[in-house]
Length: 137
Length: 220
Image 1 (cartoon, rainbow over the protein chains, first blue to last red):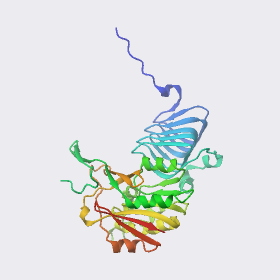
Image 2 (image 1 turned 180 degrees about the vertical axis):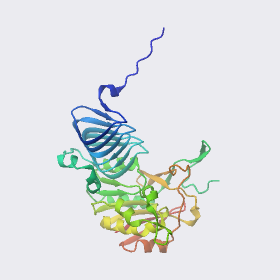
Image 3 (image 1 turned 90 degrees about the vertical axis):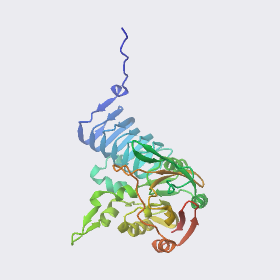
Image 4 (image 1 turned 90 degrees about the horizontal axis):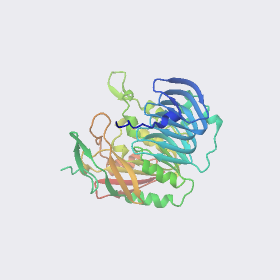
C-alpha cells in the first residue's frame, strides 16, 4: 500500500499565531513568528523573522531581522536585513531595511528607505499604534 | 477595435467574460529628460503617486534614492469621501482627503511622479492636490505629469507606469476593484488648463507624444 506523503509545514517549526487570535499590546520574542491573526501595539523580534500571513492584520510598528508580509500592516517596518511584500500585501507606513522585495500587486503607502546598515531605533518600534499616522507621514 | 489602447503592443483579451488589457511599452521623452536632470543630483527623494510599482521602487532604492509611494486614485475612491452639503447635494470631502493623503512630513521632494493622475481624480480634488504637491517639493524639484489628448478617447484606462528604461515605460492598465472594468478618463485638459493648474510652479515643458498623450515636465 502506498504511503501517504508527508506534508512538511514550515510553520510547524516556528511560533504561530492563528487567524482567530487578537493581541493588544507589545509582542516581543526571540524566535521566528508566523502571524495570521490581529495585533495592535508593537512587535519586536530582534534577530528573528516575522511573517504576516494572508489573514494577518497588524496595527503596530514592527522591528525584526526579516519581515515577510502577505496581509495588512498599518505601521512602520524596521528590518535589519530584508522586507518582502507579497502580492496580497498592503502596508501603510514607512519601511526601512537593507533589502526589499516587492511583488507586483502589493500596495504601499509610505516611504521606503533602503539602507546598507539599518540602525534599530527602540523609540521607533515602541510608538503606540494610535500615533502611527503622525509618525508615518 | 480597441483603438484607445496606448502604445503599440498592448492587446485586449477576454478572461472569464471580462475584458483584460495587457501591458504595453511606450516611449517617454519627458522621462528621459527627468532622468538626465536627476543624474546631476545626490540624495534624491522621490514621491510616486501612481499605483504601486515594484519595478519603480526597486529601481529607485537600488540607486540609493528614498522613495515615498501613495496611490492617489485608489485613495480618492474611498466611499467615505462622498458626502452631502448643507442642501443635501452630493459633494466631496476634500479636507478629509488631504488629511489622510499627501500628509508627508518631508517637504523637500526632488521629484514627483504624477503620471496621468489629474485625468482620473475627482474634479474637486485636482486643484487642492496640486497645491499640496507643490508644498511638498523643494524649489527646483521636478514633476512628471501626463495628460491624455481628446483623441485618446474616454475609455483610456488608468494605468500603472513601470519605468522600463531611461526613456521607456511599461504601461499596465489597472482594473477597478470589484467592478471588473477600468477607471475611465474624467476629463481632458488642454495646454491652457495645464498651465493654469501649475501656475505656482516655475516652468513647464511640454512633450507631445505620438500616442495621444501630452507629457509635461514641470519645475517647482
